[in-house]
Image 1 (cartoon, rainbow, N blue to C red):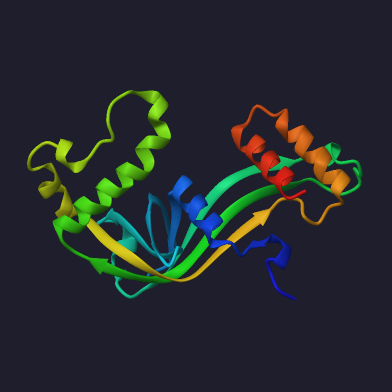
Image 2: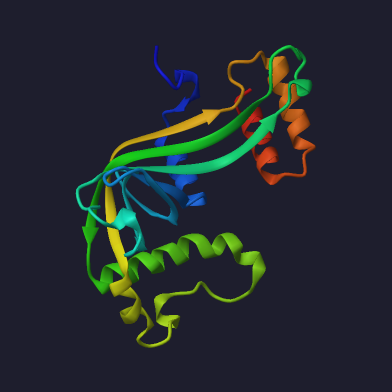
Length: 210
């Protein structure tokens, strides 16, 4: 028996890539020197339209930075999620649960150095993330060129830059697939009434699968 069930595994890597770029702030998990997790933003690079490499950085004092080179790592990108009450189904006899989407990446980390690599990564992160918050202000996307002279040069010695060569990338979509269509329609209808953005996002995704 395989887990997760095939019905919850999304084979379309374009959807995985979309989630990774819409939700770049991910859990970075390592076990080479004890179990550790830090949430950091990642740039996802592609090859043949598939996720191929991640770029990230951590504080050099972070225990995950020590021994990171050539270490196996796991990165979890969390998409929208929501609780689903049994009361929202036609059949109310089965318990509550959570529906969600996520992308799990496994790979090997490589420590990299150089200020130019860092500048490119920060600029790419800015181009990726800042437009998602465009409604907050009317300024242009922040770039390294906007930093105070000397700031980046002082910062780089205190961080550890790395890339992750992706060996396995899996997207999980738990969208009530195991329930009858009448239950799924009812759940989506209830979630659309919720004032939580994530709940409405899951409702729309459930409807797309009907």
